[in-house]
Image (cartoon, rainbow, N blue to C red; front, side, top):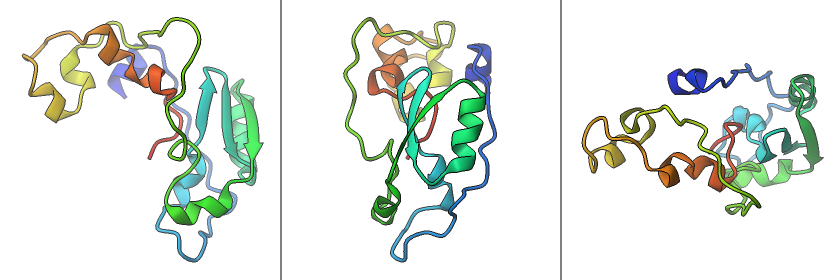
Length: 138
């Protein structure tokens, strides 16, 4: 949580899934229910049956676009997993301007740079470029 909290992000505990029973061939966790697609800092796309998640996100100021996606779960992914990269208008934002590279990259990526080196703007904004704002993951 460290770099997220330092950047002013809030953590919200996800509610239990409203429909925890997976399709018969699903290899996914019931927590796939919280896999959403962020389309802006205040708007997400979520599976239409997850009413508790919709209510929670809306109570925190998010607009929730509800789409039927439950039948896709047996193929092993949610809305965020099933989408390609998004192209956004405007400038990218560095959500972690004070973070050191050593705390933000996967260990394999850190090995390629000296300890304590700062992340170039393109690396630290990769999440924003992909359209990921911390909600949902694969």
